[in-house]
Image (cartoon, rainbow, N blue to C red; front, side, top):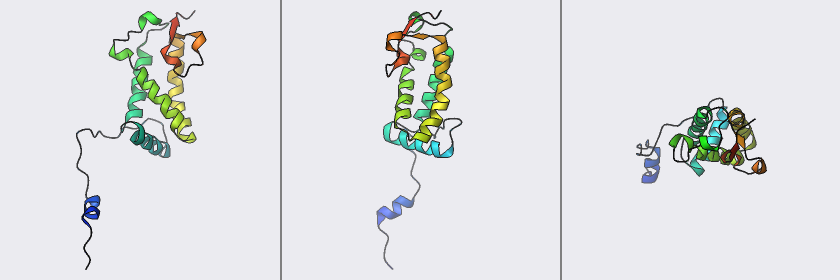
Length: 141
């Protein structure tokens, strides 16, 4: 009887957890195919659960801003105010995910962006900038 190669035997064994492994986080309201495509994006571009973490971080930042926030309310040294990296990851995911998954993720992010835009006024000249969420200019009137 032929012997199975060691690599085949090892591949069938369950993998031991690594210190940097984290339980998979999912983005609420995304369908199973969109979750799968999001997980594939995370494996290629960041780490497992990063998109769900980014949605949660962006939500915390958006809801923590006081109404009519201006540039003085945005503290770059404060950990809660530096969550714009989360929005950058979401923007990257929105551009690199397949159209269906991007549409579903956009449906999750769009209400958060609307709350953000209701609370702050972006710099009008930079409204078309790819990272529009980083430009706060004046109190909204």
